[in-house]
Image 1: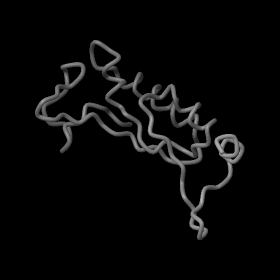
Image 2: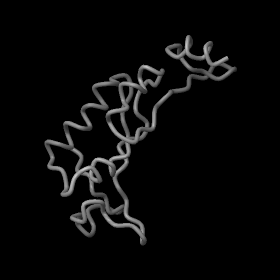
Image 3: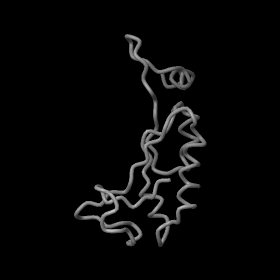
Length: 113
């Protein structure tokens, strides 16, 4: 059954009654984008942007963020990405410790350009 699914991974996904279903990958980092496309994903549904911030001792600059996010979008040009900004909960802190107190309603750390 797994082998059959692998062979059909690039076929258009649809329900039994014929409704189209988009197959999008949820990624922990941009390095997995190409692998997700190889496995049949049409695009990136969710990109965990907080992990980019956790990889650096200080907040990555805009050029670094753009390069990282471009890696995901370049791997998959068929569907849009939905980057998920890092959101702080009462018990968590911004990974770099340098986030503004309120950049968005969700206290996002990421900068989107």
